[in-house]
Amino acid sequence: MNWGYKIFIVIILFIAGMFGMVYVAFKQTNEMMDSNYYDKEVHYQTKIDAAKNINEVMSGDLISLKGENMKIALPISTIHHFFKGNIEFVKQDEMKYDQTVQLTPDSNGLMNLSLAKFKHGLYKARITWHADQKEYYREQNILVP
Image 1 (cartoon, helix red, strand yellow):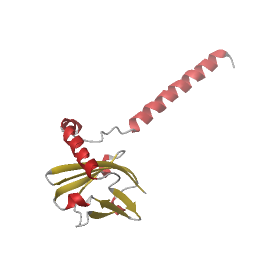
Image 2 (cartoon, one colour; image 1 turned 45 degrees about the horizontal axis):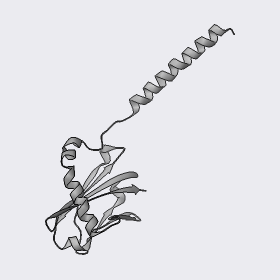
Image 3 (cartoon, helix red, strand yellow; image 1 turned 180 degrees about the horizontal axis):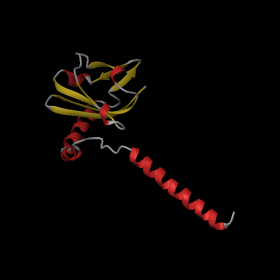
Image 4 (spheres, rainbow, N blue to C red; image 1 turned 180 degrees about the vertical axis):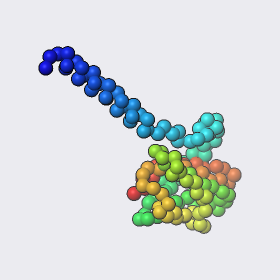
């Protein structure tokens, strides 16, 4: 085999590699984590203030996983004047599995959720609630088994 055939084979392999990369690139999904990203960015200072509010009350995680349940434990000091709240679960790689759950803690600040409605993977939980005329906010990563 002379050098002309070798160059031809290299060119064919290069073109096949390019088509392979184009195929893989078209299979990728490029979703933003939030559909209204710019609107949320404008109001981000309120989230910073709300995160400072929760850091004054407690440190540590609000959500823990126990078996087939997810346990949410809010600080007792914010429960007495609890007004409203929600938890937004954002699956970072598949937007269709995002969920928003109304936060309804009991008198001890506890709430349980079943993991049955969650798909396996990494979620970012965004917990927001209002109490004592203050807003509280915390983000936590959750790995659902």
